[in-house]
Image 1: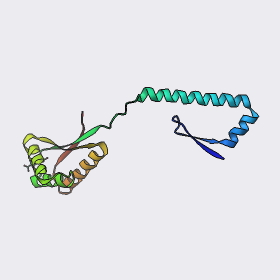
Image 2: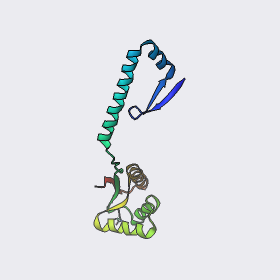
Image 3: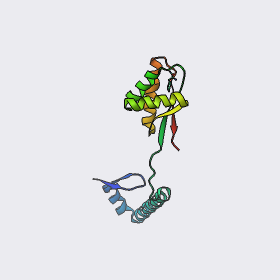
Image 4: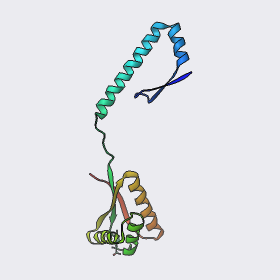
Length: 142
Ligand code: TYC
């Protein structure tokens, strides 16, 4: 018979109840020692976890997808990318594009890491397919 015991050290400890019972019968002292050691391990794991995490759960970092200006990528293409990949409405896409055009740099959007990387990748692939030198970076938001 198998019994599942949920603990926070190893995640799940699987105990074969029959085996434990046999060990308990054949070697009672050793069994008690083993159980004590398991209790100690559990207590150590719990206090380590507390020390590491406390009660604070940190939110994941955010990442900005940054567009850089260049002289060759057409304005309409940048607006298209901002609408299709970054889901900005047309007016805002136009404003972001013009701000990159005028200031040299601008933020297409802020996301969790994997989303930011996926969007930067999609925009880079789209630009490459059109042979535009659009420069896109992902930067951690401080
Ligand atoms: N400067 C480009 C032009 O005049 C337009 C442009 C805007 C290019 C934003 C890149 O990230 C960019 N065609």
